[in-house]
Length: 283
Image 1: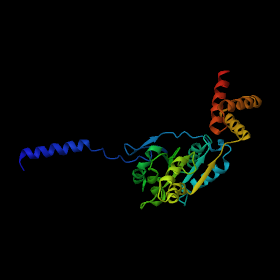
Image 2 (image 1 turned 135 degrees about the vertical axis):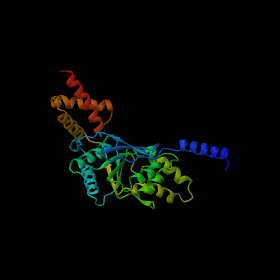
Image 3 (image 1 turned 120 degrees about the horizontal axis):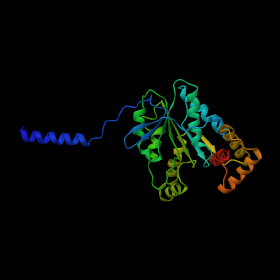
């Protein structure tokens, strides 16, 4: 091989090295208890402090709280546990419950669970994430908030294969929790469109609806009544040390629901934030 050809090949090899993506850095599991999956880099960003409320502040969802807590404790203990789908009304504490349960379980044990947030649009990269988590030193709750699929989105197939059907399957040290406003994760229009265009519409629809069946634990969340709404506010106000007479607090809380047009845990928390601000500003 002459020198000119050798130099040319060397320059080509150097150019390819510069264009190649950097190697994936090993995960520092001691950096935090919470992480966010960065799909474009295939890396995990540590979150120094997960924003979570105390578990006993979540009123009106006691049954869901107890079931998810028990499932998570079994997983933390290395016992069989289910993937969980938290579905239902907006603002009723689905994502807050996941973070609160994670915090509560970690407070009671030395070997702490890691919580990894996966954004909805990054679901197709889930297999790459699981490859990094397989065999890691920590047990992991993989969390996707507001999970749903619309239109011709076929990325649900990646999730379906990972949850149960893939050759590799879900790693034993990973559990998947998702929240959604839809019980079956798919829009009605999407299901109806598949039914109208398929050769065997019922088989096609069954395949799509079966995505939810991959979650062994379904927890439904429903809009709260007035008594529960006021109980939420009383709990938040007590925790924050807001000294406002109960009659005044109740009247203002009911007026707040009229302006918002709904009652939920989120609305209750937003009201309490407003109440705290006005109470401290009046001092």
